[in-house]
Image 1: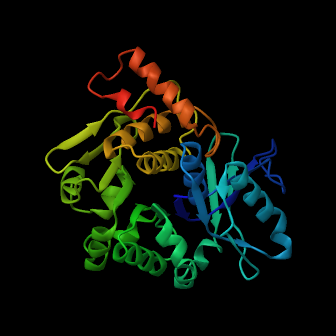
Image 2: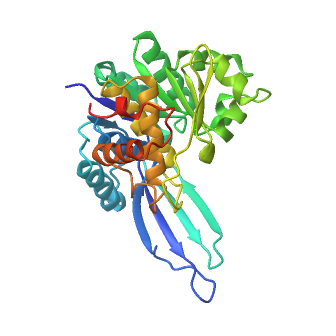
Length: 320
């Protein structure tokens, strides 16, 4: 069976609401599973891809409930977790989100599991990586691990999609980073990430440097890439009120990857990803509201019926 392999982090997000006396409760008001790796995997699965997760979670006694919750959430979203490692020497990653009464947010992240990713993970699961149709990862794991993963995929002609979550680790003026970027199949970056990586370049110059590779999302201004001849701009889809942008990037990546997995063209996959991302931001939290393949198809059919964006051939991105 062909599959998309996601190597990335899974977390538990703890949200605390400020009390009337301005203090915060000791226990979180909301507990939700998250993590960029998990979000991308869930998005790709909902979009119709077979997804295998490769990650590490804690096997410590005090972490068992959290680990069980994370694993069950992945299983509930039809993701294969047979290769998730349970390690007694690490803690699970989590985010603590403190929401003040005036709307300010204080975010604190604690990482341990993602920091443990190393070359042993690649060596142990080399066959799993080799058998994947597409490999997905985020530049959140240790740089040495990601260098080894990208080199491994490049040497074995594996398609790898990378999200530069820590863009300062990929600045283009470093020759090692420039060589690394040349080995990645697709890079999906937001506007801020792109500007940090390609410091001194305009976004237009950056995408010209990496045609059909670098995809830059621009929020309400859609996305931009270079097709080898021209700059291509795909508009954003305004589907209603924006409720929560958390998880929009992971929804985009998951749907883009699922599109490629299911045989859509590069542009068709981007259109589907763009529509799915616009649908997600109408819902609260990172994972809530990630649309299914059926829901994306329905939304595209609605756009066709309304003759929205006549310059885009929506119909070719339905039915596979």
